[in-house]
Image (cartoon, one colour):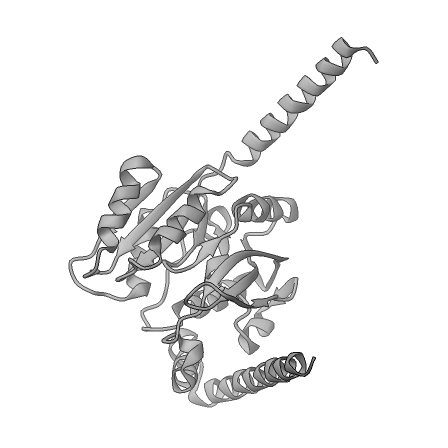
Length: 284
């Protein structure tokens, strides 16, 4: 093959990939973020969104009456990037209400979530949207890394590649920062009014309809575990998971208690495995 022919092939190949990339990104993704006194981490969240290889997105932030410099930081980025939209509450209503406001304002086909202290890896949207289209699914999730408050990696959560409603009842495998749903198949879905664990309720409500779905085993997001998180509060874990079954899914008190017992059993098993692993590492 002569040089001119080689250049022609390379040019055609480049054009093909450009057209392919453009066609795969034709659908707008609405990224839902709620903020409340998030000044310490919100910039990292916004920057991780701006670094996405999938560029056809809008970041819809609803602030729940922050009293720190959160709003000023968001407005600074908003001036330079028209894809960032900011809505303000005039009284504190909670993270569920803030997320619902952002969902209401969303224009995209796909709804994705990234909390104000979490981050995405650069190919998160590209890989996950492609995965959903290739597998013809309307809800997906992925693995994610867990870091502490100063950004040190502690472990990676790897959910099963196939999840059913019963699997999700036993354990909340879907991290909110990994979830994406397709409004063409599901319409807009909103969070319940319970104060905590609204995301778990929403995933269960969706799974009850779709029965099962697939997820990416690859870690594409970074979850920051705070000291005041539900998973760090043992009493909160019991209370709010019971409310997921009782109020969120409207199960009887008896069935809710049974489901809670199964959830706590899985929690203890997972924690004991983590402790055993840490002890083994220390012995090396």
